[in-house]
Image (cartoon, rainbow, N blue to C red; front, side, top):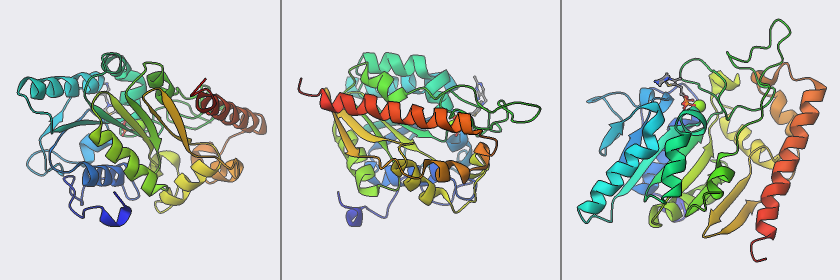
Length: 297
Ligand SMILES: Cc1ncc(C[n+]2csc(CCOP(=O)(O)OP(=O)(O)O)c2C)c(N)n1
Ligand SMILES: [Mg+2]
């Protein structure tokens, strides 16, 4: 599907209660424009479950289940299996999870579903912290970043840990489809959601999601920051399908310092921390690039 053919209708209706400039809201609208109305949705506790409201003032215009933190993947597995028992194969069962719910609290259920190759689509909107409850660091938060649990006051240095690589963990499960996406590369984003919609088995897409209050950035800076994240190698774009990994956009490795310096959460970054970050992103790229190089060997 080309961008110009994207239907205006979204089963996630606009006009939610998300913060100004929230990218998660935009991701929900656009993913649902592609998935369409034969879709069942589940969302665990996270910003998205809050800003979409509660019944009857809710933005989901398709069947929707709000579940507990740890069991998004098992919830959508149950729905998917119930549909199978009814002989229905044309309904997409999708879960939208935040990075905290995905990389930390829901990881066990996610791993189980990936291992069993359950027929589900899991979209992780990664805003790199537990934003909804006041910006606590998650397993996806970047090294050196401020959060309310990794303070930079009183000699603190921000987050001491590097983010978990959930796509790579799921590739190691030999999952049916694992991809990363960015709203700046919208055709690539559409292609991936459409592909995932039409495949059967375990499908996972992780999308970078700028959170202006959590990242301490202006509310209109999200689209530009995502582009810079891809250019600088901070956010890689690739997809893994049937044992093959494809890199969709080679990072230019330009502008990492500028990208970080635009975000208040990195205000206290030292030069040593910056060097560590740069090395981390370059090494991660080498690992992913090797997956592609080794495809046919
Ligand atoms: C078991 C449990 N612990 C804690 C909470 C409180 N809680 C609700 S939303 C949330 C943050 C979720 O973070 P993430 O999954 O990254 O989504 P985001 O808020 O960033 O959109 C937390 C900690 C909860 N609902 N349930
Ligand atoms: Mg989050």
